[in-house]
Image (cartoon, rainbow, N blue to C red):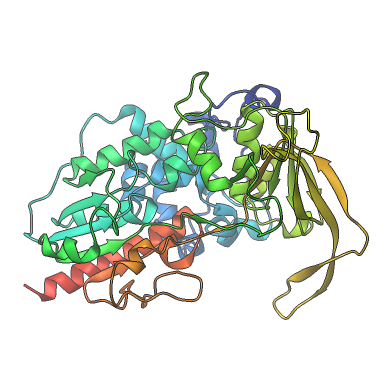
Length: 470
Protein backbone atom coordinates (compact mmCIF):
# COMPACT_ATOMS: atom_id res chain seq x y z
CA UNK A 1 0.00 0.00 0.00
CA UNK A 2 1.49 3.39 -1.00
CA UNK A 3 2.24 5.82 1.82
CA UNK A 4 0.03 8.87 2.12
CA UNK A 5 2.44 11.79 1.60
CA UNK A 6 0.44 14.11 3.86
CA UNK A 7 -0.20 13.95 7.58
CA UNK A 8 -3.86 13.55 8.48
CA UNK A 9 -5.17 16.93 9.53
CA UNK A 10 -6.21 17.62 13.09
CA UNK A 11 -9.92 18.54 13.17
CA UNK A 12 -10.56 21.87 14.86
CA UNK A 13 -13.30 24.32 15.78
CA UNK A 14 -14.09 26.80 13.03
CA UNK A 15 -12.15 30.08 13.53
CA UNK A 16 -15.29 32.23 13.63
CA UNK A 17 -16.65 30.03 16.44
CA UNK A 18 -13.56 29.40 18.55
CA UNK A 19 -12.53 33.08 18.59
CA UNK A 20 -15.43 33.66 20.98
CA UNK A 21 -15.02 30.74 23.38
CA UNK A 22 -12.36 29.12 25.56
CA UNK A 23 -13.11 25.54 24.45
CA UNK A 24 -10.19 23.53 23.08
CA UNK A 25 -9.42 24.46 19.49
CA UNK A 26 -8.04 21.09 18.32
CA UNK A 27 -10.64 18.33 18.60
CA UNK A 28 -8.42 15.24 18.44
CA UNK A 29 -8.15 12.28 16.09
CA UNK A 30 -10.94 9.71 15.80
CA UNK A 31 -9.94 6.05 16.05
CA UNK A 32 -10.24 5.74 12.28
CA UNK A 33 -7.95 8.71 11.65
CA UNK A 34 -5.44 7.59 14.30
CA UNK A 35 -5.22 4.13 12.72
CA UNK A 36 -4.73 5.64 9.27
CA UNK A 37 -2.00 8.00 10.52
CA UNK A 38 -0.26 5.20 12.41
CA UNK A 39 -0.01 3.23 9.17
CA UNK A 40 2.23 5.97 7.77
CA UNK A 41 4.96 5.08 10.31
CA UNK A 42 7.80 3.10 8.70
CA UNK A 43 8.86 1.58 12.06
CA UNK A 44 12.49 2.38 11.28
CA UNK A 45 15.13 0.21 12.91
CA UNK A 46 17.31 3.23 13.65
CA UNK A 47 14.40 5.14 15.34
CA UNK A 48 15.66 8.66 14.55
CA UNK A 49 12.45 10.13 16.01
CA UNK A 50 13.36 8.79 19.47
CA UNK A 51 16.66 10.66 19.44
CA UNK A 52 14.69 13.84 18.73
CA UNK A 53 12.54 13.42 21.85
CA UNK A 54 13.93 15.02 25.03
CA UNK A 55 12.38 12.27 27.18
CA UNK A 56 13.14 9.43 24.74
CA UNK A 57 9.60 8.12 24.21
CA UNK A 58 9.80 4.87 22.24
CA UNK A 59 7.82 6.30 19.35
CA UNK A 60 7.75 3.44 16.81
CA UNK A 61 6.77 1.06 19.62
CA UNK A 62 3.76 3.09 20.76
CA UNK A 63 2.65 3.71 17.17
CA UNK A 64 2.86 -0.04 16.50
CA UNK A 65 0.49 -0.57 19.42
CA UNK A 66 -1.98 1.83 17.81
CA UNK A 67 -1.72 -0.12 14.54
CA UNK A 68 -2.66 -3.24 16.54
CA UNK A 69 -5.71 -1.41 18.01
CA UNK A 70 -4.03 -1.70 21.44
CA UNK A 71 -4.58 1.92 22.45
CA UNK A 72 -4.02 1.30 26.15
CA UNK A 73 -0.77 -0.45 25.28
CA UNK A 74 0.30 2.62 23.33
CA UNK A 75 -0.36 4.80 26.38
CA UNK A 76 1.67 2.46 28.59
CA UNK A 77 4.65 2.66 26.24
CA UNK A 78 4.51 6.47 26.31
CA UNK A 79 4.06 6.66 30.08
CA UNK A 80 7.19 4.60 30.70
CA UNK A 81 9.24 7.70 29.96
CA UNK A 82 6.72 10.57 29.97
CA UNK A 83 4.72 11.75 32.98
CA UNK A 84 2.51 14.03 30.86
CA UNK A 85 1.39 12.26 27.66
CA UNK A 86 -1.88 14.19 27.22
CA UNK A 87 -0.08 17.47 27.83
CA UNK A 88 2.85 16.81 25.50
CA UNK A 89 0.54 15.61 22.75
CA UNK A 90 -0.96 19.10 22.80
CA UNK A 91 1.78 21.62 23.50
CA UNK A 92 5.14 20.08 22.53
CA UNK A 93 6.87 21.50 19.43
CA UNK A 94 7.09 18.13 17.70
CA UNK A 95 7.86 19.83 14.40
CA UNK A 96 11.31 20.84 15.72
CA UNK A 97 11.96 17.63 17.67
CA UNK A 98 10.72 14.09 16.99
CA UNK A 99 8.83 14.87 13.77
CA UNK A 100 11.79 16.80 12.41
CA UNK A 101 13.86 13.60 12.64
CA UNK A 102 11.14 11.38 11.10
CA UNK A 103 12.51 9.42 8.11
CA UNK A 104 9.30 10.09 6.21
CA UNK A 105 10.01 13.84 6.40
CA UNK A 106 12.85 13.45 3.89
CA UNK A 107 10.27 13.12 1.10
CA UNK A 108 6.85 13.72 2.61
CA UNK A 109 5.20 15.23 5.66
CA UNK A 110 6.36 13.51 8.87
CA UNK A 111 4.18 11.13 10.85
CA UNK A 112 1.81 13.04 13.18
CA UNK A 113 3.61 11.79 16.29
CA UNK A 114 2.17 14.48 18.55
CA UNK A 115 -1.36 13.90 17.30
CA UNK A 116 -1.00 10.15 17.92
CA UNK A 117 0.44 10.72 21.40
CA UNK A 118 -2.55 12.90 22.24
CA UNK A 119 -4.91 10.23 20.86
CA UNK A 120 -3.39 7.46 23.00
CA UNK A 121 -3.42 9.62 26.14
CA UNK A 122 -6.98 10.80 25.60
CA UNK A 123 -8.14 7.24 24.96
CA UNK A 124 -6.57 6.14 28.24
CA UNK A 125 -8.13 9.03 30.17
CA UNK A 126 -11.55 8.18 28.74
CA UNK A 127 -11.41 4.43 29.26
CA UNK A 128 -9.02 3.54 32.07
CA UNK A 129 -10.61 2.60 35.40
CA UNK A 130 -7.59 1.34 37.33
CA UNK A 131 -5.73 3.84 39.47
CA UNK A 132 -1.96 4.10 39.56
CA UNK A 133 -0.48 2.07 42.41
CA UNK A 134 2.01 3.53 44.86
CA UNK A 135 5.09 1.27 45.12
CA UNK A 136 6.61 0.11 48.38
CA UNK A 137 8.53 2.87 50.16
CA UNK A 138 12.32 2.82 50.04
CA UNK A 139 12.52 5.04 53.12
CA UNK A 140 13.99 8.15 51.46
CA UNK A 141 12.35 11.59 51.33
CA UNK A 142 12.68 14.17 48.54
CA UNK A 143 11.19 17.67 48.30
CA UNK A 144 10.19 19.15 44.95
CA UNK A 145 9.88 22.93 44.59
CA UNK A 146 7.27 23.76 41.95
CA UNK A 147 4.59 21.64 40.31
CA UNK A 148 5.25 22.56 36.70
CA UNK A 149 6.44 20.08 34.06
CA UNK A 150 9.96 19.61 35.47
CA UNK A 151 8.69 19.19 39.05
CA UNK A 152 5.88 16.82 38.08
CA UNK A 153 8.26 14.70 36.01
CA UNK A 154 10.92 14.53 38.71
CA UNK A 155 8.29 13.72 41.36
CA UNK A 156 6.67 11.02 39.22
CA UNK A 157 9.93 9.28 38.35
CA UNK A 158 11.05 9.25 41.99
CA UNK A 159 7.66 8.13 43.31
CA UNK A 160 7.73 5.12 40.96
CA UNK A 161 11.01 4.11 42.62
CA UNK A 162 9.48 4.21 46.11
CA UNK A 163 10.61 7.65 47.28
CA UNK A 164 8.41 9.67 49.62
CA UNK A 165 7.95 12.86 47.60
CA UNK A 166 6.39 16.16 48.62
CA UNK A 167 5.76 18.84 46.00
CA UNK A 168 5.56 22.44 47.20
CA UNK A 169 3.55 24.79 44.96
CA UNK A 170 3.44 28.56 45.47
CA UNK A 171 -0.02 28.98 43.96
CA UNK A 172 -3.30 27.48 45.12
CA UNK A 173 -3.53 25.00 42.23
CA UNK A 174 -0.90 22.47 41.17
CA UNK A 175 0.38 22.42 37.60
CA UNK A 176 2.67 25.43 37.36
CA UNK A 177 2.85 27.01 33.92
CA UNK A 178 0.50 24.32 32.63
CA UNK A 179 -2.37 25.92 34.57
CA UNK A 180 -1.42 29.58 34.81
CA UNK A 181 0.43 30.07 31.53
CA UNK A 182 -1.21 27.97 28.82
CA UNK A 183 -4.81 28.90 27.95
CA UNK A 184 -7.75 26.53 28.24
CA UNK A 185 -8.28 26.55 24.47
CA UNK A 186 -4.83 24.99 24.00
CA UNK A 187 -4.64 22.84 27.14
CA UNK A 188 -7.82 22.11 29.12
CA UNK A 189 -7.14 22.34 32.83
CA UNK A 190 -9.03 19.09 33.44
CA UNK A 191 -6.18 17.30 31.66
CA UNK A 192 -3.57 18.86 33.94
CA UNK A 193 -5.72 18.00 36.98
CA UNK A 194 -5.85 14.37 35.80
CA UNK A 195 -2.05 14.22 35.54
CA UNK A 196 -1.68 15.70 39.04
CA UNK A 197 -4.21 13.19 40.37
CA UNK A 198 -2.18 10.33 38.88
CA UNK A 199 0.85 11.73 40.69
CA UNK A 200 -1.07 11.66 43.98
CA UNK A 201 -2.12 8.05 43.32
CA UNK A 202 1.58 7.21 43.18
CA UNK A 203 1.88 8.56 46.73
CA UNK A 204 3.15 12.07 46.00
CA UNK A 205 2.02 14.74 48.49
CA UNK A 206 1.19 18.15 47.01
CA UNK A 207 1.34 21.19 49.29
CA UNK A 208 -0.13 24.33 47.65
CA UNK A 209 0.25 27.91 48.87
CA UNK A 210 3.84 27.36 50.00
CA UNK A 211 6.41 29.82 48.65
CA UNK A 212 9.88 28.33 49.04
CA UNK A 213 12.19 31.17 50.00
CA UNK A 214 9.45 32.83 52.04
CA UNK A 215 7.12 30.30 53.69
CA UNK A 216 9.99 27.82 53.99
CA UNK A 217 13.61 27.98 52.92
CA UNK A 218 15.62 25.26 51.20
CA UNK A 219 17.67 24.86 54.40
CA UNK A 220 14.49 24.32 56.39
CA UNK A 221 13.43 21.57 54.00
CA UNK A 222 16.58 19.66 54.91
CA UNK A 223 15.90 20.36 58.59
CA UNK A 224 12.48 18.73 58.10
CA UNK A 225 14.14 15.47 57.08
CA UNK A 226 14.25 15.71 53.29
CA UNK A 227 17.47 14.21 51.93
CA UNK A 228 17.42 15.92 48.55
CA UNK A 229 15.64 18.91 47.00
CA UNK A 230 14.73 19.50 43.35
CA UNK A 231 14.07 23.12 42.34
CA UNK A 232 11.67 23.39 39.43
CA UNK A 233 10.25 26.80 40.25
CA UNK A 234 10.09 28.00 36.66
CA UNK A 235 10.74 31.47 35.29
CA UNK A 236 7.97 33.66 36.62
CA UNK A 237 9.78 37.02 36.65
CA UNK A 238 8.52 39.00 33.64
CA UNK A 239 10.76 41.13 31.45
CA UNK A 240 9.83 44.62 30.28
CA UNK A 241 11.35 46.92 27.67
CA UNK A 242 11.95 49.84 30.07
CA UNK A 243 10.29 52.30 27.71
CA UNK A 244 8.20 55.31 28.80
CA UNK A 245 4.62 54.52 29.78
CA UNK A 246 5.07 50.95 31.03
CA UNK A 247 3.57 51.94 34.40
CA UNK A 248 0.27 53.06 32.86
CA UNK A 249 -2.94 51.22 33.68
CA UNK A 250 -3.68 48.70 30.99
CA UNK A 251 -0.07 47.52 30.63
CA UNK A 252 0.44 43.89 31.64
CA UNK A 253 3.17 41.33 31.49
CA UNK A 254 1.92 38.30 29.58
CA UNK A 255 2.57 36.33 32.77
CA UNK A 256 0.10 38.44 34.76
CA UNK A 257 -2.46 38.65 31.97
CA UNK A 258 -2.54 34.90 31.37
CA UNK A 259 -2.51 34.05 35.08
CA UNK A 260 -5.50 36.30 35.71
CA UNK A 261 -7.37 34.65 32.86
CA UNK A 262 -6.26 31.01 33.11
CA UNK A 263 -5.93 30.44 36.83
CA UNK A 264 -8.16 33.13 38.31
CA UNK A 265 -10.89 32.92 35.65
CA UNK A 266 -11.03 36.62 34.78
CA UNK A 267 -13.07 35.68 31.72
CA UNK A 268 -16.14 34.99 33.89
CA UNK A 269 -18.92 37.59 34.08
CA UNK A 270 -18.21 38.31 37.74
CA UNK A 271 -14.52 37.47 38.15
CA UNK A 272 -12.57 37.43 41.39
CA UNK A 273 -9.76 39.34 39.70
CA UNK A 274 -10.05 42.32 37.35
CA UNK A 275 -8.64 42.38 33.83
CA UNK A 276 -8.92 44.83 30.95
CA UNK A 277 -11.47 43.61 28.39
CA UNK A 278 -12.66 44.97 25.07
CA UNK A 279 -11.15 47.81 23.06
CA UNK A 280 -7.92 47.32 21.14
CA UNK A 281 -4.97 45.27 22.40
CA UNK A 282 -1.31 45.23 21.40
CA UNK A 283 0.85 42.24 22.29
CA UNK A 284 4.60 42.81 22.06
CA UNK A 285 6.59 39.67 21.19
CA UNK A 286 6.52 36.77 18.77
CA UNK A 287 6.75 33.58 20.81
CA UNK A 288 4.12 31.07 21.87
CA UNK A 289 3.31 33.17 24.94
CA UNK A 290 2.59 36.16 22.71
CA UNK A 291 0.21 34.02 20.62
CA UNK A 292 -1.50 32.79 23.80
CA UNK A 293 -1.92 36.32 25.14
CA UNK A 294 -3.23 37.69 21.85
CA UNK A 295 -5.75 34.88 21.36
CA UNK A 296 -6.86 35.18 24.99
CA UNK A 297 -7.42 38.93 24.60
CA UNK A 298 -9.56 38.24 21.53
CA UNK A 299 -11.68 35.76 23.46
CA UNK A 300 -12.06 38.27 26.28
CA UNK A 301 -13.77 40.64 23.86
CA UNK A 302 -11.05 42.76 22.26
CA UNK A 303 -12.31 44.28 19.03
CA UNK A 304 -8.83 44.24 17.44
CA UNK A 305 -5.63 42.51 18.53
CA UNK A 306 -2.17 43.27 17.17
CA UNK A 307 1.03 41.24 17.45
CA UNK A 308 4.01 43.62 17.34
CA UNK A 309 7.27 41.85 16.48
CA UNK A 310 10.58 43.43 15.54
CA UNK A 311 11.62 40.81 12.99
CA UNK A 312 9.86 39.21 10.02
CA UNK A 313 7.50 36.24 9.87
CA UNK A 314 10.44 33.98 8.98
CA UNK A 315 12.10 34.72 12.33
CA UNK A 316 8.90 34.50 14.39
CA UNK A 317 9.73 31.93 17.12
CA UNK A 318 6.16 30.75 17.86
CA UNK A 319 4.98 27.35 16.65
CA UNK A 320 3.69 27.39 13.08
CA UNK A 321 0.38 25.87 14.16
CA UNK A 322 -0.20 28.59 16.78
CA UNK A 323 0.61 31.35 14.29
CA UNK A 324 -1.78 29.87 11.72
CA UNK A 325 -4.54 29.59 14.32
CA UNK A 326 -3.97 33.20 15.38
CA UNK A 327 -4.17 34.42 11.78
CA UNK A 328 -7.33 32.43 11.15
CA UNK A 329 -8.93 34.02 14.20
CA UNK A 330 -8.20 37.53 12.96
CA UNK A 331 -5.10 38.49 14.95
CA UNK A 332 -3.19 41.21 13.04
CA UNK A 333 0.59 40.91 12.71
CA UNK A 334 2.63 44.12 12.65
CA UNK A 335 6.07 42.83 11.70
CA UNK A 336 9.41 44.64 11.57
CA UNK A 337 8.08 47.03 14.22
CA UNK A 338 9.24 47.82 17.75
CA UNK A 339 7.60 49.90 20.51
CA UNK A 340 9.42 52.96 21.82
CA UNK A 341 6.71 54.42 24.08
CA UNK A 342 3.32 53.59 25.55
CA UNK A 343 1.03 56.59 25.35
CA UNK A 344 -1.46 57.83 27.94
CA UNK A 345 -4.74 59.71 27.52
CA UNK A 346 -4.25 63.47 27.61
CA UNK A 347 -7.84 64.66 27.27
CA UNK A 348 -8.59 66.38 30.62
CA UNK A 349 -12.29 65.52 30.25
CA UNK A 350 -11.59 61.85 29.67
CA UNK A 351 -11.62 59.82 32.94
CA UNK A 352 -8.88 57.62 31.43
CA UNK A 353 -6.49 60.56 30.96
CA UNK A 354 -2.79 60.29 31.67
CA UNK A 355 -3.25 61.78 35.12
CA UNK A 356 -5.32 58.72 36.01
CA UNK A 357 -2.83 56.53 34.22
CA UNK A 358 -4.70 54.78 31.39
CA UNK A 359 -3.20 53.65 28.08
CA UNK A 360 -4.31 55.39 24.88
CA UNK A 361 -1.87 53.97 22.37
CA UNK A 362 1.56 52.61 21.56
CA UNK A 363 4.25 54.39 19.58
CA UNK A 364 6.40 52.20 17.35
CA UNK A 365 9.26 52.51 14.89
CA UNK A 366 9.78 50.46 11.76
CA UNK A 367 12.73 48.08 11.62
CA UNK A 368 14.88 46.52 8.93
CA UNK A 369 16.98 43.37 9.13
CA UNK A 370 20.71 43.39 8.54
CA UNK A 371 22.91 40.69 7.11
CA UNK A 372 22.93 37.31 8.93
CA UNK A 373 25.59 36.90 11.62
CA UNK A 374 27.76 33.80 12.06
CA UNK A 375 24.79 31.99 13.57
CA UNK A 376 22.49 33.00 10.71
CA UNK A 377 20.47 35.45 12.82
CA UNK A 378 19.66 38.84 11.32
CA UNK A 379 19.69 41.73 13.76
CA UNK A 380 17.03 44.42 13.38
CA UNK A 381 17.83 48.11 13.27
CA UNK A 382 15.60 51.19 13.41
CA UNK A 383 14.61 52.98 10.21
CA UNK A 384 15.12 56.70 11.03
CA UNK A 385 12.00 58.87 10.98
CA UNK A 386 9.64 55.89 10.89
CA UNK A 387 7.66 56.51 14.08
CA UNK A 388 3.93 55.85 14.03
CA UNK A 389 1.20 55.50 16.66
CA UNK A 390 -1.41 52.78 17.11
CA UNK A 391 -4.46 53.57 19.29
CA UNK A 392 -4.88 50.77 21.84
CA UNK A 393 -6.40 50.35 25.29
CA UNK A 394 -4.27 47.43 26.50
CA UNK A 395 -0.61 46.55 26.02
CA UNK A 396 0.72 43.09 26.90
CA UNK A 397 4.48 42.55 27.12
CA UNK A 398 5.40 39.02 26.01
CA UNK A 399 9.15 39.40 25.59
CA UNK A 400 10.28 36.69 27.97
CA UNK A 401 10.71 35.87 31.64
CA UNK A 402 13.55 35.13 34.04
CA UNK A 403 13.79 32.93 37.15
CA UNK A 404 12.58 34.61 40.34
CA UNK A 405 15.60 35.36 42.58
CA UNK A 406 13.73 34.55 45.81
CA UNK A 407 15.15 31.05 46.29
CA UNK A 408 18.67 32.11 45.36
CA UNK A 409 18.52 35.10 47.71
CA UNK A 410 17.43 32.93 50.67
CA UNK A 411 19.81 30.01 50.09
CA UNK A 412 23.48 30.57 50.86
CA UNK A 413 25.82 28.92 48.35
CA UNK A 414 23.25 28.56 45.57
CA UNK A 415 24.86 30.18 42.54
CA UNK A 416 23.24 31.57 39.39
CA UNK A 417 24.43 32.59 35.95
CA UNK A 418 24.22 36.05 34.40
CA UNK A 419 20.59 35.49 33.40
CA UNK A 420 19.49 34.48 36.88
CA UNK A 421 19.27 30.76 36.12
CA UNK A 422 20.59 28.30 38.69
CA UNK A 423 23.97 26.85 37.78
CA UNK A 424 23.82 23.05 37.43
CA UNK A 425 26.02 20.28 36.07
CA UNK A 426 24.97 17.69 33.47
CA UNK A 427 23.01 15.79 36.15
CA UNK A 428 21.08 18.83 37.33
CA UNK A 429 23.15 19.20 40.52
CA UNK A 430 23.45 22.80 41.70
CA UNK A 431 26.36 24.29 43.61
CA UNK A 432 24.89 22.85 46.83
CA UNK A 433 25.13 19.21 47.85
CA UNK A 434 21.79 17.42 47.56
CA UNK A 435 20.10 20.32 45.74
CA UNK A 436 19.16 19.74 42.10
CA UNK A 437 17.35 21.96 39.62
CA UNK A 438 15.92 21.91 36.12
CA UNK A 439 13.54 23.47 33.66
CA UNK A 440 12.97 27.21 33.36
CA UNK A 441 14.58 27.84 36.79
CA UNK A 442 17.86 26.93 35.06
CA UNK A 443 17.38 27.82 31.39
CA UNK A 444 14.88 30.65 31.54
CA UNK A 445 11.62 30.28 29.61
CA UNK A 446 11.77 27.19 27.36
CA UNK A 447 9.50 24.32 26.27
CA UNK A 448 7.44 21.96 28.40
CA UNK A 449 9.22 18.90 27.03
CA UNK A 450 12.72 20.30 27.69
CA UNK A 451 11.68 20.97 31.29
CA UNK A 452 10.41 17.41 31.55
CA UNK A 453 13.73 16.14 30.21
CA UNK A 454 15.55 18.10 32.93
CA UNK A 455 13.22 16.65 35.56
CA UNK A 456 13.98 13.11 34.38
CA UNK A 457 17.71 13.74 34.39
CA UNK A 458 17.59 15.10 37.94
CA UNK A 459 15.38 12.24 39.18
CA UNK A 460 17.92 9.72 37.91
CA UNK A 461 20.77 11.63 39.56
CA UNK A 462 18.87 11.97 42.86
CA UNK A 463 18.17 8.23 42.86
CA UNK A 464 21.84 7.46 42.32
CA UNK A 465 22.89 9.98 45.00
CA UNK A 466 20.51 8.66 47.67
CA UNK A 467 21.21 5.03 46.77
CA UNK A 468 24.86 5.65 47.62
CA UNK A 469 23.81 6.92 51.06
CA UNK A 470 22.24 3.60 52.00
